[in-house]
Length: 203
Image 1: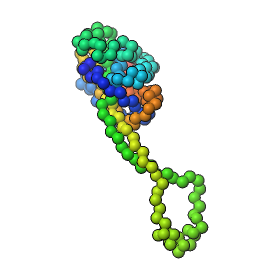
Image 2 (image 1 turned 45 degrees about the vertical axis):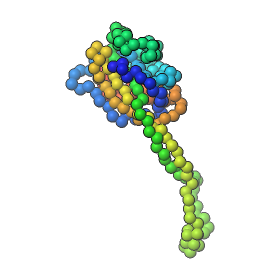
Image 3 (image 1 turned 45 degrees about the horizontal axis):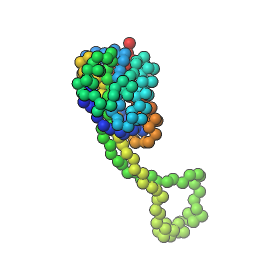
Image 4 (image 1 turned 60 degrees about the vertical axis):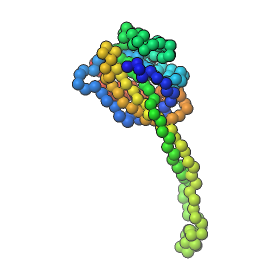
């Protein structure tokens, strides 16, 4: 479970989309009260923003979200066995691990459109002036090229009692450097899906 506490430092953009997910279906879902949230990111500020927002949103659903940056030291300061023991001895019901895993770049052409009401130029109102102008002036669209970076991030929720996977999936979003906004949007997407899948918020 804790072996995925590795390096990564990719923030996420507003409009996070969950592209696929998996929910345990062959046994009842545990009734969560306290979930440890771990953002696997080298950038401490991004990790803190994400975990803080997850804590806030989980509280709205009647759960206590525990921020890992407040209770766990950096991975390189604790052996795996010691970390496992600390989690096992705690009163967490589950551990939610969030880890950026891949990225890709896409280039898009953005065409600039003219604004305002359209009025044909004077030469358009009869055929032959327009015909000669059309062949004499080849139009090159006004555009620019925009490159966007897409980040794939996985999430996994484990039961601390038996360390079994309960909920898993992957998101895709566009990189943006407004880390606070990215963290808030990503946390909202995750908590919304947790509720939709009836992992949390059930009586």
